[in-house]
Image 1: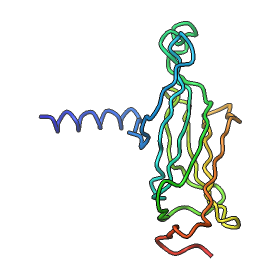
Image 2: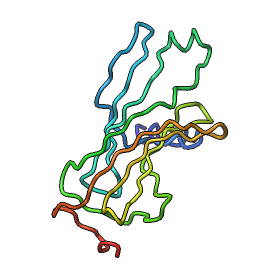
Image 3: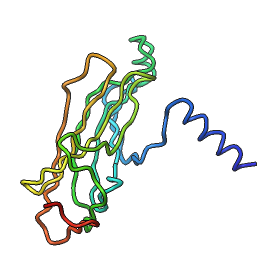
Image 4: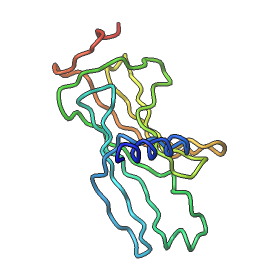
Length: 163
């Protein structure tokens, strides 16, 4: 019976367009009496073992939602810091200038997402992690960038380092 309930829950999430995220909630700081918080998530890169990003984002409380009448949306503001948290093993990552999505979380019911995109800067042998918002229209310029240099000896490329 439990497996049926779990399968039904996952199916409902998929139908709603919500996928469980890889992020782990590691901190929460209250910023006012309205219940608004800054939430800090640890986000491991699924294709780069040994790199973890910490993402700080704003979470609106119920009182703030009632006052402003905007029930289903959080601001796009976010800050990111990525570091080596162990030996780095780089899997099959996209190497193009547009990079690859590492993480995505809805910040509104339908229209807006908070995204982490990874870009490999081959010339400088560095991974770039960009936190940004994506919206259907009125895209946001609010971004935050973190870098992880790959010059240390404990970096392994599963398919060989790109030339």
